[in-house]
Image (cartoon, rainbow, N blue to C red; front, side, top):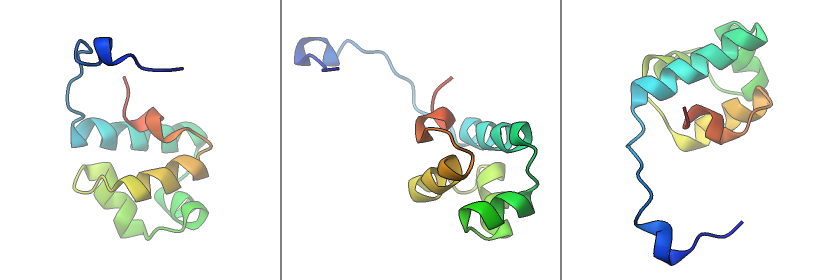
Length: 81
């Protein structure tokens, strides 16, 4: 798939809010049936890091990629509606 430069500026996007990302991460974790501890073990992050992500205090892209991989989701799952 390619993006035409002619249409690039016409795309209407809104900034992704940290609270939206946080809610999507938490919903994805709960859908899989993981506790925070389960996800921490699976993705290699500390419980506190996951708590910060799910509260919207930290939406580090590298951490989101690790979480997405652990939940077998594309990282974009946390960024799109």
